[in-house]
Length: 520
Image (cartoon, rainbow, N blue to C red; front, side):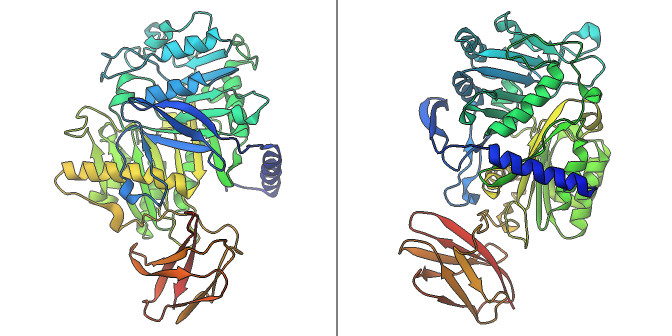
């Protein structure tokens, strides 16, 4: 999308082909120690599974697709971060808005010794560079908001760089681990919206997304090097070439393939991220769900209102810091009770904030030609984020990942609406089946489509224990049974009302296929 001329289209196609050729994700399962309050060995990445997302608050797995439960790091995202830092072998490149380990600062909360992991990595030869938002109040920066106290704890030999005074805030939140390794399986990108602060780790609504992909890691390194002014591993910044904010150029790749799914990457302000936010919203067929900390840019709320007007179901949670701005007025008028304001949750954290910044498009994967996707990152929906701040954004077109975000959103919306006295269960407006469409038409074939009285189903799937389920547009199972891969299966659809249905086929080894058909 966002193609204005044929030459640009050719460039994107060429870039995508090159990236697919260069991408060499192996089938080696990498294991590491993740700390979730206690030490438990967990799979970090495995074959065909190179994207992991986490919520920093409870999730609702009752709306999970089968075998796709979301993961919550309750007060333990800092420990998980340490586990990733500990696996670094060669380089750590960190671009982080704020880093504080003082458990009494601001909202308060537990922060593990991240600095120890950083210093240990440096001691074992890992080359480290660190870009941060300035905390010098004498230069006009608000040290009370981003004191970056944690930087005083790291080894003084590790080079650090504050962003330039001519730009907005350096609001990025990413870490590239072993991005230049000759083994593409080493490269890890950690991003999302969480700062390394006590309240962010222990109290606030945040999300984390991690990629094992050399091409995407290299793109983030390209952006890091533009701010750093040099590409030397562990070297000092080159202040004569270093650029931030409005002076940056659009020099990074934007389109990637990970596990067969399309991933987009954008950096503000060079990539005009708001345009991509708007275009993403405009693709919605049936459902939009969002959580947003700072929502002050009217250009980003207009397409949501337009989506509502064309019949898209929209639910959102906005932090109270966005009250009083035009988007709140526009959206509250258009959404009514479907827009909730977050000011903490009684019984959970009454003084927390909704710091997540994401929007889901068609999380149920049910609309015809739907493209489920999640847009997230450091980018608040504000004019500053779009024009002067350093920000990073990813768009992930993967219904499994989207469904995991939906589990977090559903938990938040239900808890917040319950606290307000009117519990809202979103299952009635969103079908929690976010399974992927069949990529190989030879595996499951349905005909005729549309159908009247019978639906023929043929399979090219090994195994004998094959079952099917048919769901209507309310997510209700209306028919089920067994299928035989040896024959053409005939399903009686005479009793189904006219409309769109989803056929889910599941094998004994839990592999799933889905397809949509229309009953006339």
